[in-house]
Amino acid sequence: MLFDVQVRPHGEWTVVSVVGDVDLASTPRLRSTIAAVVRSRSPRVVLDFGGVDFLDSSGLGVLLGALRRVRAADGVLRVVVAAPHVRRVFELTGLDTIFELYGDLEAALVEPLQAAPGAAPGATSEVEAGA
Image 1: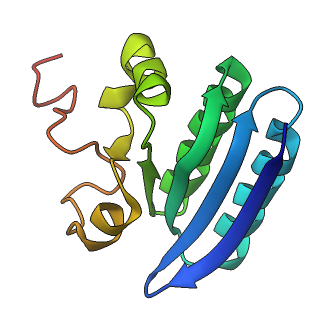
Image 2 (image 1 turned 60 degrees about the horizontal axis):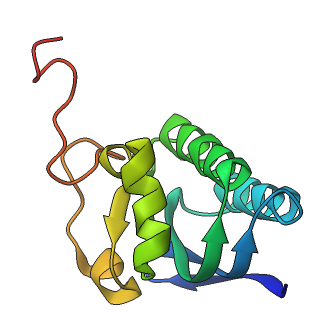
């Protein structure tokens, strides 16, 4: 299956556009691309998975690692997920409460920043939840 990753600046954001299957074969390239973006650019990153057809657990692992890297740099990570079956993977794993998910790139780029960088829209923190 075709897999491609493109990086481009968009205002104060860096957009990482992904096309194809995000699986064990493609995750090393995705991981290294995201790491390079966080090291060399603004830690405001939008992962555009609008062209992703398949996402497995190795891909979710890369996303969790990306979130840790971005948060460590006091940044924000947003993920665009257009395909309902790919969004369902986030929902089934509970990761839809961890990541800021958007239906399209434009929405991810125009949404104002949350008070707590990296917090999912509408998500409550453990402190707010009384944990």
